Length: 430
Ligand code: DOR
Ligand code: ZN
Image 1 (spheres, protein in one colour):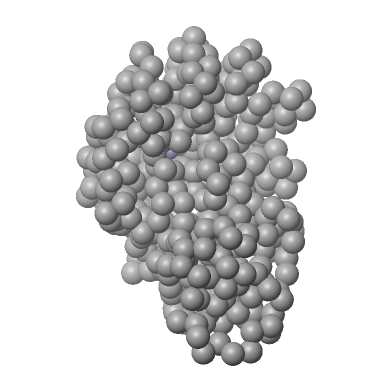
Image 2 (cartoon, rainbow, N blue to C red):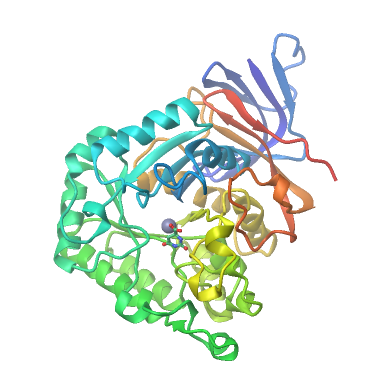
């Protein structure tokens, strides 16, 4: 048995923040009780002193690129899930843009079996919407669901054909799969490498207008309205997308949305020095967009914070800006960057944790993201006040592509417990 003693338990479901002790027996939470009720701790195998720490449900990241199969030099299921537990995540959903693409039950089963052998946390595969993500023919949603996929997405690309997207929404609802939409009109974004704005003009790089995202957000909202089937919008980055999602929610259209920590922590000025680690798709936007994203999180227009962890090696990043691949790693920076929003007063702590746990779990249709007696012991323990400089040796991902290297972060994950087992612990000191 494990005792977590003296921590501040953040319960995103009950919306409470309370000092409580937690007893874990085997895979489950046996008891949650007021502090100092247990005087004799001798029969516990491990007592975790969580004084001054926050104790949360195991965090859930619904948008991760694990790169296995196919690009294991960037990341594999072992290194990706290790980075996940180091970032506080007990459950991650992995995107299908691997090689081969996860467009068949055999690839889905392969990922699950590799995660079972080598994984540090639970992995929930997202399969492709279309065969080879080509946007032409739908994959076999029933087979994929039976193999263990929780959702479908052509992430990395949009589904351009509106009729195919309509059918995807309808079949996905029938099969109990979540549709996650990467919103980008490639005819508008083509050739662009960063946000179209005064910085792109200043540094002479071709831009991607906000409308490239917003046109597809609008289309998917309209398809959700037409079909009454839910759609989840991935990596929302613009003020215009926020407006559209707000309108849709007010009309009762079944739409949910996520953003990534980089869209509320950085803007397009991060590219002034041509830092390819800050090149992502959709691109880092303007100061005004960043403000809109923060307010959308506060107002629950954006339901989820997901990392879009996208590992790339120096081969793809240490090249000319226009040739560099898009994406940054994010599993180990999500907690400190989200806590910044709590410190700035944008989010309540329960709200922040909800967007990193129960929020995504509910959208994926998995039971995680809660902390209850009798429930699975998936728990994250965070030291919110610990400040440090992020260095390469702290990063468990195989790839180190993050613009936060060398930057000060505040808040670190101390323990990640998956099904009652401590899968990560950190004793990094000042
Ligand atoms: O920046 C990104 N990287 N955006 C995407 O949509 C795909 C991702 C990747 O797979 O590298
Ligand atoms: Zn992605």
